Image (cartoon, rainbow, N blue to C red; front, side, top):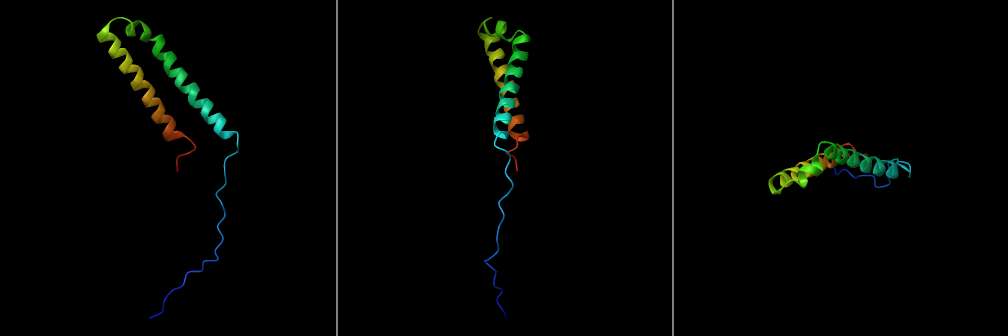
Length: 83
C-alpha cells in the first residue's frame, strides 16, 4: 500500500473583497428601509393606536415589532454578508 502525501506548498489567493464604501451604502440602505417601515406603520395610525389604550397599544406595539423584525430578517438574508 502506498500513502498519498499532500503538497503543502499550495498557495491560496484571498477572496476578492468588496470596496470600502460598500459597508456604508449597505448600512445606509438598512437604516432607510427601517425608517420606511416605521413611516408606513405611522401612516396606518400606529401611533394613535399605541396611545389609545392598553389592548390597542399592545397590539400596535406588537405590529411594529413584527414589521421591524421581518424587515431586519430581509436585510440579513439579502445583505452582501450572506454566503
